[in-house]
Image (cartoon, rainbow, N blue to C red; front, side):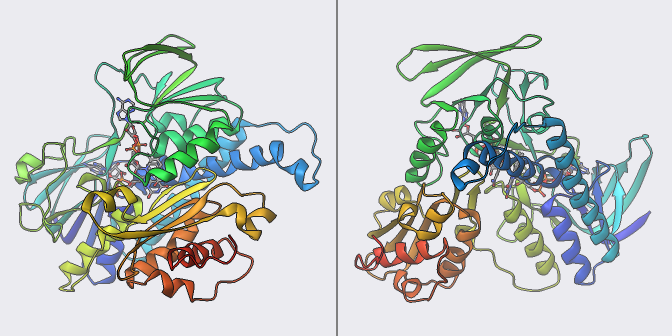
Length: 467
Ligand code: FAD
Ligand code: NAD
């Protein structure tokens, strides 16, 4: 039996990053992945393929709806779904191959197979042919990720009633896609198909879309998406979903008891994800999980069993690739005796619709609830010259700052390139900048980032220049 310093279970962004950092720090490291390709949910069926399709569908949408205005005439524009899926598969393959290269470069042993704890110090790794290999390790990092959740009484048949995984592989553009859940997946994948011409109906249980983000963002996004083929049924509870060969029938009930019947050709169930620990042998190792099936960890991300750590989607917190990555580095550096730190309040959240939505820090609702005294600075993209030049005038930047100290407490952006713009807010908040600090920093003109400066000026005694 081969022994390692660290055994990492799962090769998603949590696992592969943890493995690389462990190897950099001199640990003899093995990574175990049950599938043939490395990269986990994020690279294979999550972040990367969804962004590839979002980009392709955005080009198509712009060609149909915006090129004319720019003075570009194109005839006979057609969406070739087969080619879009083929390109997406190539992007996924290149990205996953990149992880295999990084494993080799860092001299990390890669084992393909399903890992199960035999006890707190050993794992069995069973490959597709049923062959079992036992390994031992001083430390284990569980990074087994998550799987899509469903709703009671709804059977995901993967043909008509689908999850994000199948929605990334559709052979034809749906006529009518019914989406359960107005969260990140529903709106991103709904956008892909709405841009390609599908009618998209989103049924959301809460009274807002992206309800965990600052409420102003969901309101604005709903307004924009409603112009692009989306219909929203907010405050509706899905009661049943039935599928036949070519159709789905969804029954939902509004908060005042009214029933709605919706017929479509696909139903995407995107109501969250659940931690994945199936057949991992946690009981054999004595590792505890909470009432939602998440592995319980302490402030060091160690489980209740010494030497067994857990990171990423399988533990509490935001289910985000960059959160998993930070946790992977955190555990590796701790094992090396370093003192790493993660500021969970400053993990940005992004929705890759167009306009993009990005957020960091406290929402206005959270500040109100905690009784914090705050001031707001808003800047609409319609007042930005850069946004007018690219015809991206929907949305705004909203800055929340402490009334007394002017420290930035939250930044909420909906608009062009918000996903990239949020990085400046994260840096500012990591260094505890005030709104006036940002307002006094020179921003290149014309850029979208000037809008962040303007929102900070607006928060600083209403000094915005361009509104
Ligand atoms: P995962 O990426 O889920 O990886 C876990 C790996 O462990 C898997 O490969 C699995 O096969 C393997 N595994 C499980 N059990 C075992 C076992 N017993 N033995 C061996 N291997 C095992 N996040 C973002 O930040 N940005 C985005 O844009 C984004 N887009 C997304 C789009 C979609 C459609 C989806 C579904 C998710 C998206 N996410 C996004 C979320 C992101 O994918 C996850 O937060 C991230 O992948 C979690 O990383 P992880 O390492 O914890 O687990
Ligand atoms: P989510 O938590 O973002 O959204 C689920 C939505 O479904 C919520 O708005 C919720 O109120 C609603 N819902 C729950 N039960 C319902 C019901 N019975 N009827 C109607 N609506 C109901 O989950 P998701 O969109 O499935 O995404 C899963 C995870 O993947 C998220 O945690 C997210 O962080 C991650 N993800 C991230 C990105 C990104 O960072 N851009 C993209 C995709 C996925």
